[in-house]
Figure 1 (cartoon, rainbow, N blue to C red):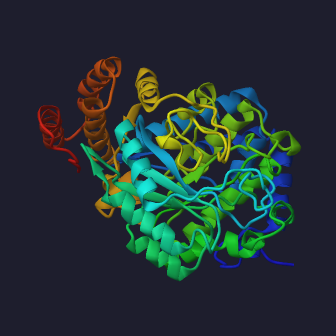
Figure 2 (figure 1 turned 180 degrees about the vertical axis):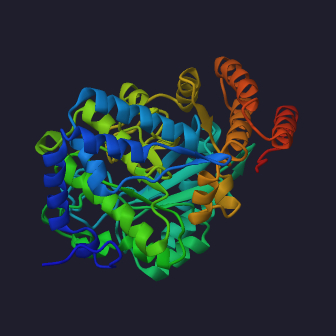
Length: 482
């Protein structure tokens, strides 16, 4: 039997089945232990430190106790502290991005994904470099600056050379005032050598969803193809970091396995990265399984309702306070509105999950990976965020200034968000408003920027930001950053 060891490089030891089962049992035994719950909540609360705040975070066992807790006033307290943490470290900014699907050719047999090899009626597509250019121009014309590229696993159709060529093409496209300033990558687990190549290509975050941490379920859900290798997949982040990638993004597909198991496994993976590499995940994503071609989500009987989904997000925020959290257009506007204040720091907008979907006038469905619940335009999403008190941010400054990995965490912990990320968000929002927004969105946005500039604590930074914003409005000068 494998022994739990967060510092191990073996998947069965840092994601240890017996430890997860013991954690779930411990949480069940203590879900009404008011004294312990209060201690955990107090530990999670942000504490003022110098110019900023510090947070201790929570262990997977402590966070699992909160997740199991059914006492209404304690759950409300969790939500209040989650909101405190979100505002302390990320402010009211929400970073915007869009996925770009390059190819849906795939050799895996994942039973929850329509790209699985046995699906013979889905339209298989792979973008040429000219088609990549056209997709990028369409995204730039919306106002996007950050992409997450997606591709099925197929060593013949989608080798690493193809991915690298696409990244080069994406960065090369400058259209009017548009430019994609950062490409994040969501592709299959690969080798240290290939991760080095991705790093050299200038990627931002490498994202890989575990799908499920339950090994027995994982093997059944991935019956064929290279993704069937649970250990190789689970240990991918260690190879990525060995290859020089500072920022990695974790995630599970909620609904495949029991949520308590996934929750504990996800936090154990974060603890493992911290123990081995000195920095946890840059982001955690929280997708739920959705309907797609050839896929009926009702087949999977572990779906979670919105109220539990909200609680999971709040508990993740308490456990890993410095980690960004992502929610996609898989979720409805109503659901996204509920969870934004609980700790979400990034959302996608105007997403199309089909290969070549952005250049089509009508949303194509023949090659979608999943149904998109929130189908609003980027302008509508930006306006909705501002109406709810959030700053839509198109900033990519930290990646390009080398503030990645532990350097970003240091910025976050030292309370410099308001002097750095906050003005960067306002300057990139100004770019969006001037270049792409509707008149209604402009009116709301410029008023918000005027109000939010007052929150920049350092007078010199505030004056520079104001000067840059005036330049953006008066000329074609773009891409100011702290």
